[in-house]
Length: 419
Image (cartoon, rainbow, N blue to C red; front, side, top):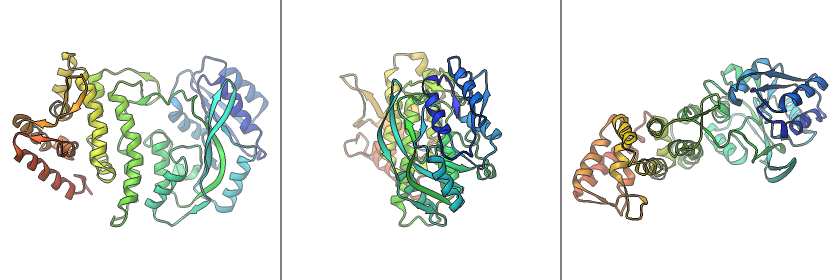
């Protein structure tokens, strides 16, 4: 567990562990420099239960780095992360999980979960996600990814993972697999045996997270797909639908992060501390995030046009909304490799002040857009489909055909990726 100003919910989380009928557990807690009553609560629970061990810090390193530091102190065989605002679903949870571990000896035990709303000390479970019981061992890993993404809250470390297994593959949920999305994706790719329990064993509180409204400015958009890519079959024939689903699930999260960054939402550093970044730096960071091979390959499988519209549309709205801030726009234009020019040429502000995609491309603009697609910085031709929609007309019709032919070659190469 990691805590930071968690005094309102901490006691319930700790009691859910202490009331377990299974007694053979330890709870390693890292406090990130709380200044409220959290410290008092932690000290009291340390006093009354010798299984609770707290690491006190003066500064905040966030829960991702916090898990890494806690793992260094762990002496158990399996670990799971208990949020300071969440709780174990019943007093039998750890015994039920232990029974599965003793029976099957898996690398990962996945469990069902409930989603609760906290209101002045009262928890109300609003939804449950309970998967069917399943043991995975030698099956198609791509299919396993798809099934876990559908049936469990897969990108969370509320589940139970063998610590020796994590150490074997260097998964500590901070570096190089940052957080539970990246860490648990790599764990699925590496796991030999996994059990899915058909019981609600964890309750996630949805309205109390201190970090859900902020995104990491330096988030890696390649890492998660690299983990999935290592288990992809050589021959993808007949697996397009599954690939589309898996790639789309990863992309949905990454697109939301990119949109939040470029549209001015609150940011954190890698230690999850609040930081500020100007619009120019945000715009250029998002351009970097979406220009890599992994993003292009995911878009190739999940839908190039729709995801390009989500990404470039958000960037374009931000860019055009700030056109009057000439110094900012000048900084972007001088440092952008392709994205600022693309949204400048492909979008416009209409008479109602709305930022919209152009439906008429002049000869001069069409030539510049072609040039953008010839540059190695956008070798994946992100955004090309948006210029080939039926409602888009060109003053020079050959330019439309040229862009189509360039895109065709890109798609034939597998989305422009090194496949």
